[in-house]
Structure formats: C-alpha cells, structure tokens
Image (cartoon, rainbow, N blue to C red; front, side, top):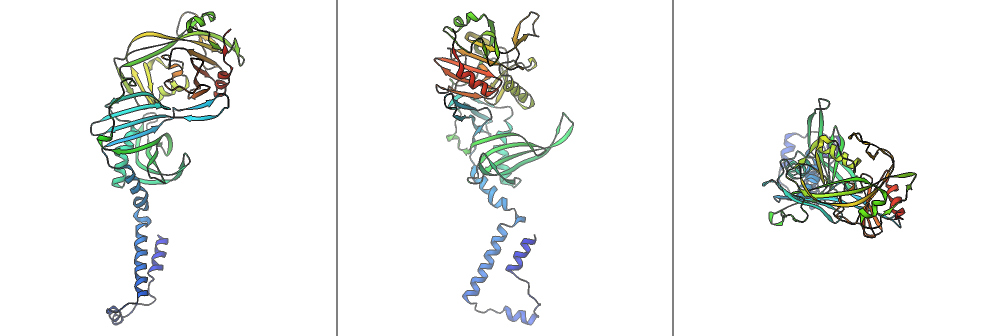
Length: 440
C-alpha cells in the first residue's frame, strides 16, 4: 500500500495550503487550456488507469495470468487431454550407450455430460490399450482439469501460488482447490490441494500436482489440454487394441537345463553357467495364456497405489493374495474375476542368483529369492508372450537397442528372439544384454 500511496502522491500531489472558496470558484470557471496542459492531464489520467489495472489489491494475477489461462482452455463440451506418466522408459543403444526417453502416455476424451471416457494408453508409438467406458467416478486429475479448473478460473477462486521452472520451462502454479480432509491413519485433518502449472508462454497447462500439507505427493505431466466440440472428439475404440473382455496370465515352471532348446524350439542365448559372480541357479519354462474376463473392476485410491508399487518393485513375483487377480493397463490398476484361458505361449528363463524353499508349499520346491542380487533372462520366439517382466512388449525397440523400464527390467529383440532381462541394477541389465551368447 505504501508504494501505491507514493505513486498517487506523485501523480496527484496534495496542495500545500487549502484555498478559500472564492478562489475555488474563481479557479472553477471554464477557461481554455493549452495543448501542453491537456496532454499532461490526459497522461495523468492514463497513468492512474494503468495503476488501477495492475493494482495489487485488485488482483493482478486475475487480470493477467488467470484470464489468459482461462482463454487457453476454451469452452468446448468435450475435454481432450494427454497425460505423460511416470511409466515410460529409456531407449539405450547397446553399442554407443546413447540414451533417449520413451514416454508412456494416456490420451483421454471426456464428455462430462454423458459421463463417457475414451482412453488410449501408449508406450512410445505403440498402443497398449484402447477402451471406451463410463466411470463410476472419474479420476481426480481428470476432473481437476475439467470442471474444477475451468470453474475456479471463471469464478475467481483460483489464485497464482508462484512462479517456477518445470521441465526446463517457466510456469505459474495455480491453486484450484484447497481443503481440509481427515486421514483415517492418524485421525487428523490434513490440508490437501490441487495445483495446475501453466506455461508462462502459452498459458496452457503443462502439469498438475496434488499436495498434502503443502508437500507434493503426485505429479502428472500434461502434454495437451483442449476443449472441443463433440464432432471433433473420438469415442470409437479400436477393437484390436481394446483389452475389454480379455485376460492374460503368466508363470514359470522349473526344467532341466538340457530341455531349454526343446522348449524354445531353437538354441537359446544365455550367459553361461555363471555371470557377474552369480550362479545359474535355475532354468524355467516361462508361459503365458490369454482368455476372457467375466468381471473387471477399476481399483483406485490407496489400494491401487499398493498394487502399483508391488508390480513396480517385484515385477515377476505375485503380489499378496489378498489383492486377488490384478491387471495393469498403463497407469490404471484393475481387479479381475476368474477367467477361462486358451493355449500356452512358451519361452525359456535363465535365473542367475539365489534360490530358496517355497514357503507356500509342503514340498521342497526351490524358487528364486528376489531380495538377493540376481539376473534373469527370459526369451521367446512367440510374440504373444510379451508381458514378461510385468510390462507390455507391444513396443519393440530397434535392433541393437534395449528399452529400460521401471522396476529394473529391459526388453529388446535379437536374432528373432524377444528378450526380457531383470536385474538388480540398470547397468547390470545393459552388461547382460551385451554379454548374451548362443548356448553351447
């Protein structure tokens, strides 16, 4: 306020003494003003108008940043948004070591009036799933970028939290919602907030984040956000890419080492009887089967996070049985009912590491110990066996390259074999990929 007062005092200074009424009336009589004086008065009025436009107490963010953000969204009835998730990977050239990001993205059309969603999940350029559905409750980040974001900008409840740099670009963080919610874990109220990052150049959203007690716990990158007419929207799925009504299971059974070529149908690639001081502890027949799903239910909230963490941290090990049969499509988690499966698609797995007794059986069954250092090589000539390592192999990296995925796994193609390697570190995966040789 002091700055404003100083500006006002400079533009319209107070008189040193108060004139008497006769002088006031005399000065008020009409008279011609010189052009210079008229220009000075006009300049003063313009300066005052400019001051009030940007005056802090009038909300400069409202006049500038937030109005531009609202204009950038548009007012179409259908929201079209592309989220870039944290389930992407890194493409590595095995000869040069050059690295490039491979992104996982969800493209969504959302018609709120019909409660209809069309969602396409991609890894790189490959489509992993394509589905159209009516959600019981839309995802929070989707509603945040539709009704909540636009309404907060329109009714003035949104406010600029601060200026920042995100992915190398200057952004403004805009708070669109802040509220107190109870946590059943500690039985206390906590402050939850949703914030959208808008580009300082285009004023379009580039990210959305959720905060608890002003600490960020989830961030979604926004590649694209627009509102379009129904005629410009897409609500038709590709039946070949749709996972609706489909299910897949995978597993492995121990085999004798000499039986590996028979299972694979050709001579396998391996790392010898020992690699990186890890013994070849077990050879396995890996398999997958496809079938139909009678029931599929979307899992959200903390339970979805628990399952997602389990799949990420232990991609070849089943999660706790209390979770039931689970399925991951892009960033979404589903719980599925019992399914009927078709024929087995098979491959070979070489496990280097430590094996121990399976506590779930009475017999002395030896199973991999995943908490110990390990390298696991799985290969197949059957592309239908493409979800090994908990990740889809719809995306195929170029020959001579490997794509590293979250959860310490890598997938690539060599000599007609689809290969997945799991290891304790990414560098161990790369070294193993380079060291593979024909089994003698």
